[in-house]
Image 1: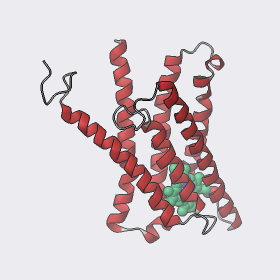
Image 2: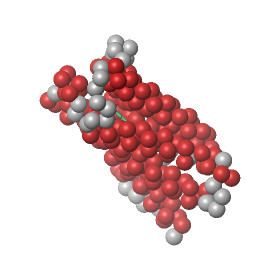
Image 3: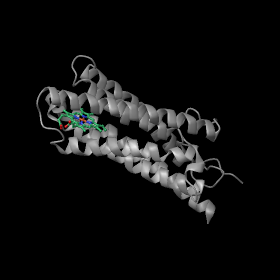
Length: 225
Ligand code: HEM
């Protein structure tokens, strides 16, 4: 018999509620953080302003939403068939890569105009690596749509590698965002508790995404064994 405070699979209900709460919180965080950076940078006010704006849109908004889409707990399109989710996922990822390329172009051209050295900070170096990795990750995902491109690889194996490398890419994006928050530009206007609160946004999103991807992987392993 199913007890009142338990889900039918024997897991206490409180786990289900907390998973849903953390997924919903992450939606709010990724939207709130992107709006906050947009208000702070005022895109269009200078060439530089486009950099934090596009990068936050790419990695905090589009990439987070592209992954949360598959969350069994907090996705608004839970009832959609998996194929439709896959399509929305690659559209969001396409937007992520486009925004990342625009953000990189804005900062590179701005540095060029001001005669400043390129990729001279940890943020700049890791940021460049992140943009290259996200572009590669998207290219490597093409065989998931056109399976004939990856002969000898099962779809299940391709999906497993895609999820694992996607998680690494997401973590790279989160660390680049965090390093961006350590930049002189950001710390000149945001300090104290507000800085810590801002830094919590990419950190909490990364933890939730990490938990989602690893639980999905563990669930598949349990089914296979
Ligand atoms: C995942 C997101 C981000 C990536 C991939 C990224 C990438 C980069 C790259 C590659 C550069 C160096 C460009 C060059 O040297 O030509 C750079 C510079 C810069 N970024 Fe970001 N960025 C991101 C987010 C942010 C955010 C959110 C902020 C501000 C809050 C920010 C602030 C800056 C500043 C001030 C510079 C110039 C100083 C420096 O080179 O360190 N970035 N970024």
